[in-house]
Image (tube, rainbow, N blue to C red; front, side, top):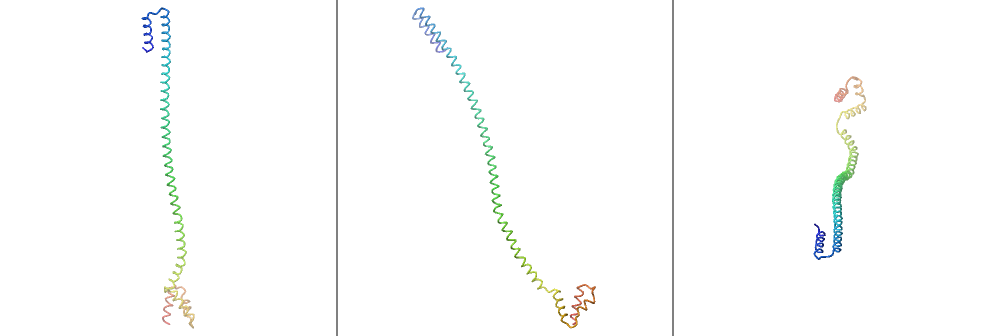
Length: 186
């Protein structure tokens, strides 16, 4: 029993003990009944309010859980995007390093190619001169042949022309050998 019903029972007993009149008893009984009805209505309203508060609290808890779930999903998405951006940043940094290294190497390679080309251009005339000098230093048959021809041209009776005409089917080394033999004989 609630406080209100206890109060009404006490009030009825007190009025009966005092010995009020019938009219007053009726009036007090009616008042007690109205108070009981009002208290019952208030209890119904309080119960409805408590039910509404419980429903509101339940919806609030559900909304809070949904919000936390959404926040967790957004946080995961943000973390995924951060990882993706980090990987892309690392890839860009690697590409930048490669481009910087290529930029540093390109002038070095170009300079090396230029230096090699210049060196080759300088060495070609030296190699030609070396070849010419090497041929002039080595005694070969052409010098001997040139000397014999000059001697033969200066001589009163040319002997070489006659020797060469005598054996056109001979090889050049045989002719050179005969010329050398002929020279030693003279």
